[in-house]
Length: 78
Image (cartoon, rainbow, N blue to C red; front, side):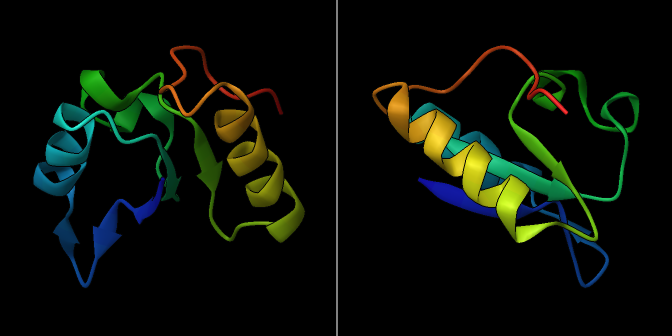
């Protein structure tokens, strides 16, 4: 399981996210961007807006873990 900030020091981490996805690793994206600002392949992944709330992040992590570790294909509820 991974928590990825989409933009680290001005550099997008899309290649890392793609690699983790290829390996079947579930992840939560942290971002200040809206879904439509992300590449289409990342728009339905679990996402927590920055500045993030630790309770919401914990909820999303529990949610993807509770799903057997599989990557969710629906957006998180708000």
